[in-house]
Amino acid sequence: MTEQFKQEILRADEVADLDPYNVRGKTKTEAARERLQSADENSTKVEKVKEGFFNNEQTKILAENKFKRFELRGRTVEEIIDKIPIEFHGLSENMNEINTIKSMQGEVAIKTNKTGFFIPDSGSKNYFKQSGMVHAYENEVVIPLGLRGVQSILGNLADYLELALINLSLFGAKYGYYYTITESKIDHYRNGRSALAVGARDPSGIHVLSSGLDYKRGDIVFAAPLIVPFRAKYY
Image 1: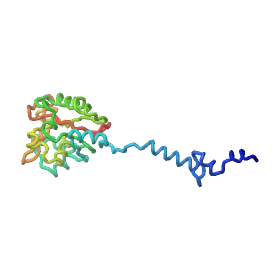
Image 2 (image 1 turned 60 degrees about the horizontal axis):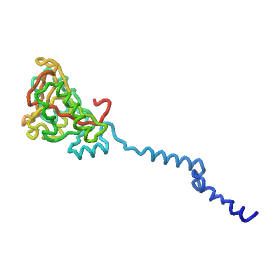
Image 3 (image 1 turned 180 degrees about the horizontal axis):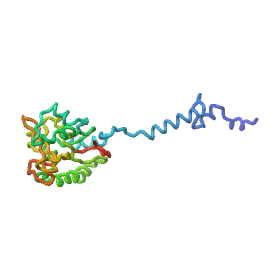
């Protein structure tokens, strides 16, 4: 055997090092499985976010723009009544239905001041106009911030009541004692098909009243959008 031929022959451990799927002491099958598993883990390192909650990027942008996040826990109006005083006006015939209204489960983001919480100029408009302004808020305010995967919605009565349970100043003096219209609707004995409005927090509690869908309540009932992570169903 010539010297040149000897130099061209590699030892077994050197041959093993040339095999990308071999790890010394393991079979090729075991080594290949580990490598593929590792590659799969690296390629799927995606942020895991619970449905209904903001991801890290959304949370960062919201904080930078002075939105505060609150977690709602799917409470009914009846459950919330036990925790904070609420005055219902002219709604005694609808209370069985109202008590079952349930808040969403997950995070919402709002501005915690009067001018940020309520959409400016959304008072003195009927429900349909106010609802449209909430959806327009998404294009005019939310998307330009770089927020993706979120929606601007009008919450139901329980959503706003639970927010008021968490944020004890909501709807009080700091907010001008204003109301927000809600997505919750009833058939009222006097006003016909109506949306519920909530607000005007004073020492007696938070106030809830009805507003006919075509009725303009004046500059006391505004529209307060909730920013929420996009999902197919909220309730």
